[in-house]
Length: 148
Image (cartoon, rainbow, N blue to C red; front, side, top):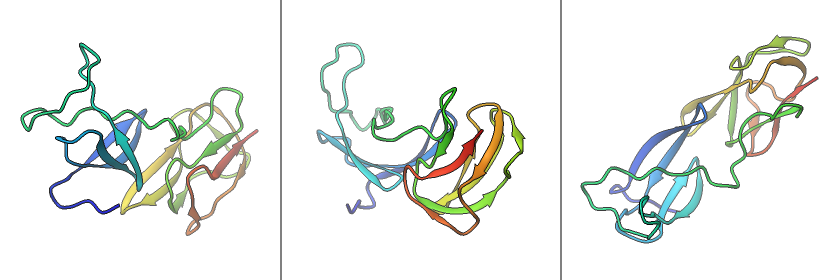
């Protein structure tokens, strides 16, 4: 999808992960947004009434909810894999098999759209396998790290 220069580009942080978001014309319904290269249609609703409304030029950009098909990078307790939530190139790998990590430690860094995205550990644990290497291209949902 092409977005013209009148559209806004913002970086949105969700659960510690940054996303490059291009917001289309806020006076249309639905609003077209591109989140890290994936296009979504967003309906802006009035928070107090639940009715659809068109934002005016004086309103700030409405919050964009994380699209349901975008998986959280990381694992829930008991899960073993950290997944890529954006496509890009691995530019740093900070861990190795057998290494003990704490929640929030940087595991690797993905370069996506000229933006460095640190992939952090979602939990304490020991690294079983590093599934990527520097220079490797990854797609959305690829396994990056496996915990023991």
